[in-house]
Length: 166
Image (tube, rainbow, N blue to C red; front, side, top):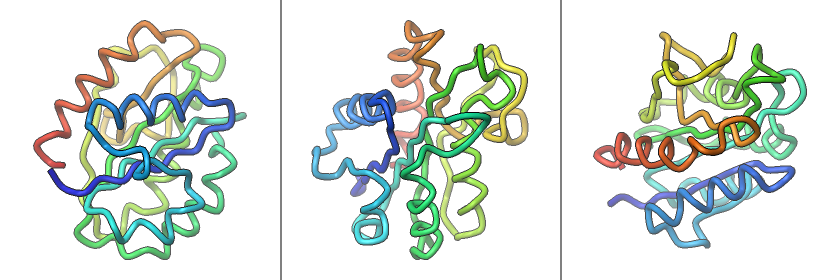
């Protein structure tokens, strides 16, 4: 397996707990699970970046990702593999569900990295998301508010889908 770094933004601990679950399932050391403020100094150490964010307000990035995304834009991502995971509320914010993943993707889509881990929208109830490209989420979309009972199965399926690329 390639060297994997997980970078997540979490205000209430939900996305942090998802990052930790993913790290545990992939046997990634806790020292390789970090917040976006470390991305500029650490991204070069990894072949694979797993990037996670919760979505806030009306489709906004989690606070740590504003500076984190700017830092990530300055990192050489050529040849790196990138996968996304995100948290949102598909009921109360059905028109901006997991938008933060899409905002990060938009910021780095032209950086020469290989994106993996798209997820079908078929098992989700939402009306709109900038994280949907060609009728698929660009990463793992999770709703810990309304569909927490689906989280473990969704994480497991996503990990199996990305495992050959990481």
